[in-house]
Length: 116
Length: 114
Image (cartoon, rainbow over all chains, first blue to last red; front, top):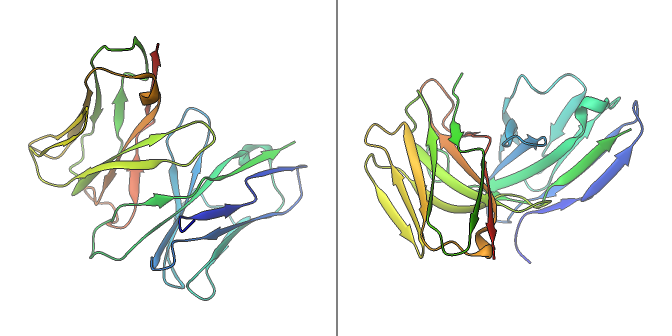
């Protein structure tokens, strides 16, 4: 399977704990995105990497959130001191560089976080 | 703030019926994409439209981008139970927005009953 891979698929944690999600994009894609989706809503942009550089972070990302893509391949999204409002599906997507405009995104299956 | 409004929010129809869902914005987008999402899964791209007035067909699905590139529609002919899912529109490169991220609507949840 050469699609975008995310793990874990499901994570249940207690409030205050830290969690980390991993995303392995399609190998030839140099753009990587994190989105968050809550029930009844469309995905909301969190952050974007081009290769290893994090080029934009949404205001939705509080200081408790950090994302990395150290070698321009896989990426991690860490949430520290989780809160119940962090419960959501965290979606990773990748795309090839096709110029200045957004290319077509290929999403992973998502990591669902439940904070008790 | 760019917003994409999708309507209707929910749609339940019988197999064989036709339907149209809409995606509207006050912003101009350089491209607009339609995705379909099943429960517990990530969105899957259906089509990208980039030219005002553009019409694209994908089997029983017809997508149209408005002349002013602010709105789009998705028409499904002879819907089948396998068409059930959440249909999301997403705009890229909108007015004042970054070119490399998408703004999603809330989606239309379609149920096709056998």
